Image (tube, rainbow, N blue to C red; front, side):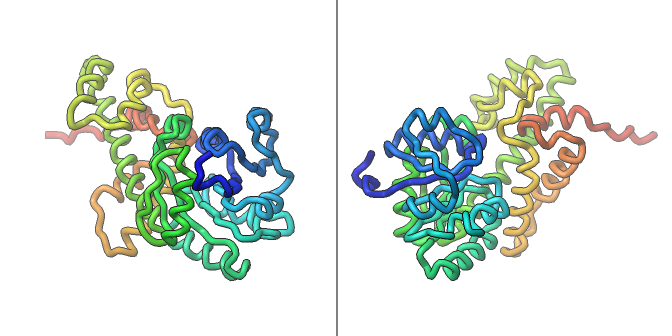
Length: 301
């Protein structure tokens, strides 16, 4: 445990695909972790984590709580009520790790401050890097909030990856929206290019191994190369979440007076993908999605 966080008690909510390996990293990095979970977590308990009966107990005992829940509605469910995180919270820093609306995070933080007389502060800290990055401790963590609070957040989250303060509250969510725009465009292009190459008779393994060393290369291609080649898309980064995230990108575009070129096409593509029943697959499902679309018949001469 680092000297900077030796006196800080760290807690966590949300042990999904990303949250669970982050919990392992936090426990190993700080030597302790408080967890409120509706499901038994024997592996974490055996490793030294303290499993609590309620979010209320977590709020009362922790100095910093990381919430890795899908979005703000799920977070609000564990904040409110007699057994909620805020019911008995003292001086607490709440780290919101979901990909969410920046205005929504700011509104929630203002309400929490009013309800707790300022005892509970908020930092937004969405992450990028997927399950692999969470397990390896190499996530990119985007921080928004008060500089003192984000400095503490960065120290607490250091075992999970690189945490950078990008601006006031909500800045992390804006950064994640930008990230998701790039990821959505890239994975759609990769899926489409794979279908074009396969139907043209190319060796997909040779193609993507070659192109990964050029300008088409990316961490996303490296992580999804085998899936693109094999046509597999077992869930990891669930595609339907991208549909939600692109909505947040659209909110920022409207708020900033930006007329995007790619965003409308990407939103339409992921809406169609989810409507086709592919939303619970990995984002590499773009190959299957493109392959299943029907091309328009060529115009008659």
